[in-house]
Image 1 (cartoon, one colour):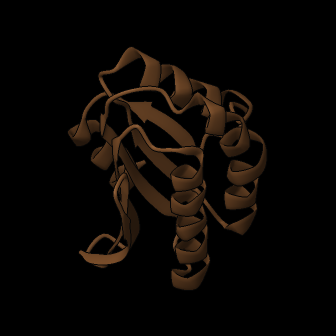
Image 2 (image 1 turned 180 degrees about the horizontal axis):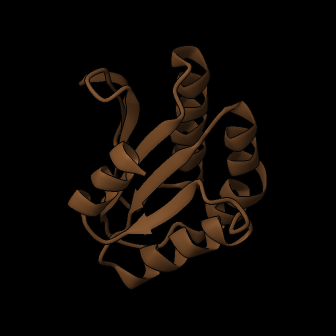
Image 3 (image 1 turned 135 degrees about the vertical axis):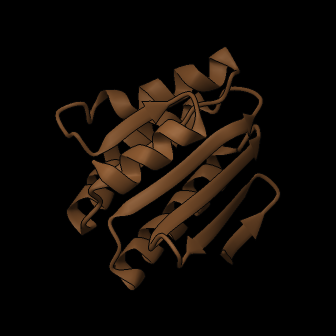
Length: 130
């Protein structure tokens, strides 16, 4: 995998083998980090003309709910317009991080593009086969 963007709480990779974006979130991402990481994903989605994202929150240790509304109302609609078809989101074990993730997806439940998972195997299977 090729690192496309990296800062303390997020690394965005291009997975050439699977032709998807792979994102690793860590710690408690700030609003700025969430927005920067998300904008990098959007740019990469358009640049690589891909439609799938593997979004890993397993290493997030707390809430990031102040950015969740922006993700739900601003960023996800732009991702969907840009061609997002599958966004596999592995949730953190942290209940506050899970709450933030659910806030981010709540406004986009009418789409079948965004799925929350608790394990990597299920997420990868969905990205590859559904």
